[in-house]
Image (cartoon, rainbow, N blue to C red; front, side, top):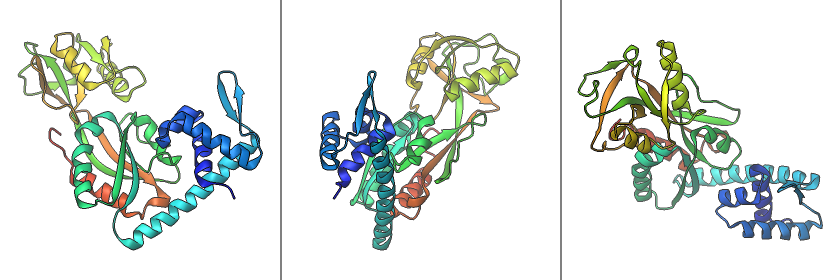
Amino acid sequence: MLDLARLRALHAVALHGSVAGAAAALGYTPSAVSQQIAKLERETRTTLLERRGRGIALTEEAQHLADTAQQLLAIMERAETTLEERRGQPGGLLRVAAFASAARGLLPGVLAGLAVRHPALDIRLTEVDPHLSVDLVARGVTDLAVAHDWDIAPLPAPDGVKQAFIGAERCDLIVPEGHAFAGRAEVRREELGGQRWVCQPPGRVCHDWLVRTLRSAGFEPDLVHVAEENHTLIALVAAGLGVAVVPRLGTGPLPSGAVSVPLEPAPVRRVYALWRSGAARRPAITETVRALQAHWPPPGC
């Protein structure tokens, strides 16, 4: 009889395209995943992985097994959901993915409260880029995701994935102390010409929003510094190197040298929870979503 744990390892390799990616998703070491695959090859007397250049690829037989594993895992998810629903209490493992500022500014309080109220619930949080979250949920890599969208980039809604609105988050203009905008009650978008900007890299929604907004106001943005993390952007502003638009969630107190000024019309990010339709009745999902909504807005938003 085929071993489900080994099939799960093969399924993870198929999803992530590598042994290392599968190991990270499963919480194993790469050698442990390789051992599971090797045992499955002996068990099935079939070659499952083959070298292609510097990477690996699944054989045709392996892809068939991975597809079968996906069906079995879906059946298991439905069975676990039914059992948990009958118990009426959240429990078991819940894998949660969240974008960086939500993982810092929203999830700690939510997870701490859930741990006290539901000790049988084992939540494991992973910080991921928001544009990956929906796909991770759809493919069964994570059970629940906290993601965001902007007006220029609505959240995709693939078949089999449900979502719930958590809250709307404002973004502020961050300027150096002594800047002409510091101390203002508000700054209008049409006043933003001629500024030196620090922002996130191209391809990130925050970057795209800034470029589109400034161009629609008639300005070509002067992007002088690029950084991934909001705290890095704020540090660059505090050093007098430019201005930035930063979401409030997870920003925390501003350092000396940086000042927050309301921007009007205010940029708004919408925050959502996402999960698979097959697990919609699971108490762990419904209780975590309820806790996220009850905890909104966190301090600073």
